[in-house]
Image 1 (cartoon, rainbow over the protein chains, first blue to last red):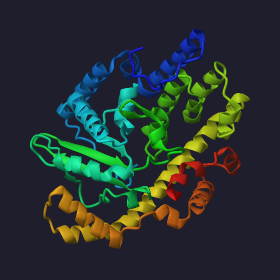
Image 2: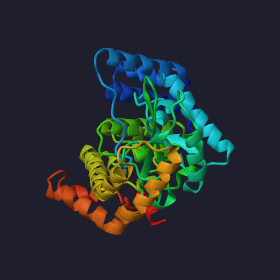
Image 3: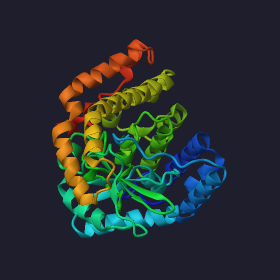
Image 4: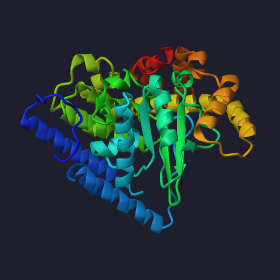
Length: 76
Length: 307
């Protein structure tokens, strides 16, 4: 597991169920974000993920995509 | 700054605030990246206890990026003051550096927090429950992030993750894998449908999402309406000048005191706002009337406005 922990509590579900949840999670990421981003999300460390985002942003910039506007006035 | 440098900059800001005894945490997009859901945002959303706004403001006033000082962003940022943050307003700051503008949005309350965000911290970040609740917006892109966070919570054995699964196939697979506690299922009618393999589950999840989107759209509309006289007053008072942060802050407090309602949603009536949103979904044909039964009771997400 390369991702940051999200809780300080001890997990109680079995390894088998955990493996199944991870399978479901991967299927969702592939469907929602695509194969490549699923790998970025699930298999990379935070440093590698940040480098990927940097590359993605740089590629967008080179191709004339302007930076997104910051959020609206009401915190949406 | 590269995303890595930006991440370090924001994390360092949180560390320095905590060293001063301030309860604060990074949330939204950067928290998603931290938890393993990549988002290309470079804006930082920061949760900060309203009782510590003076410390935060002082730190921002003394923090430079490439020798550039921090300033309020544009004319439409409400002041960093507990009175307005209690009503769900947020404050916006920026450092206009040579290559890139670094931005910081500050929230005293996490929008739609069902419990105080201060009770849900993981390291320097807001917990996934808070982040997922904040993402229930009217922006399409946020909904996959919510489900991804819900999945991570379930994987970490946190049953509240069930409240954030908005994909019907994923939900159907999950109910066959791990039990959903009755007290959680009771908070969300769509979960009952999933547990009984009811084919209407996709429609129920869609209706629930539309409800959240419409709640957000109406909230923004109302806040923007209230913001207009304040923005006009700020524009007039500044008359194009760029003031030092603390001076600008005093000006914003003065303008907000005269022109910005502290808590527009509460003034309007929370129950009225929720009811009108529900009815609006039917009237506009966004969801069928039968779907009203599948919508959760959302009052708990707005109760912080009564605080």
